[in-house]
Length: 202
Image 1 (cartoon, helix red, strand yellow):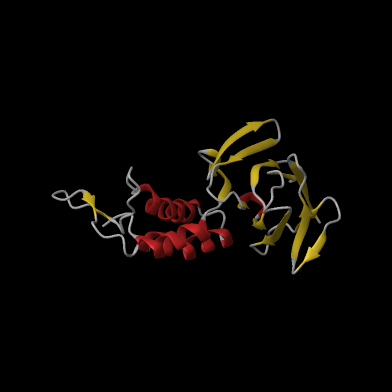
Image 2: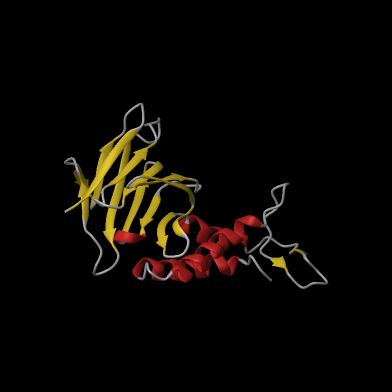
């Protein structure tokens, strides 16, 4: 059985370990594959099987969806965009479309939630409790990061986010403008148009 609900759950510790060891691209590839496997087998009419039977004589979705919910939990808490640089492959974005222009690396976010980003070169985990990130731009020379947030709406007048360095050698960041803290999160009022947040090394 492949694309099993266990893949999405097992991806939780795998991706956590990758954020602690951002030079190990294998962890990211395995973890991200586990996250996406569970949603790739949803049928056109919306049926969500618990797995796909990969035996050559079977090759079909399981007829039961009772375990799908636990796998979707794994997807929901794992969904994130990862920006990494590989020696052979160059700049890679998992959960986004990446482009490079001069010193700037731009990622257009394509994940469902659009709320979590990991910048591997500086070991920075950016997590939003409220607000959606449309694009993230990283300067490979100065290490500056720019986040473009979706406009405010009736349910999201504020953005709340955390910045966490995941390795001992990671760079600590802070917003370029003074933002208030609310329960350990940076609080940012959203505008009717897009809002840009600049993050710089402390």
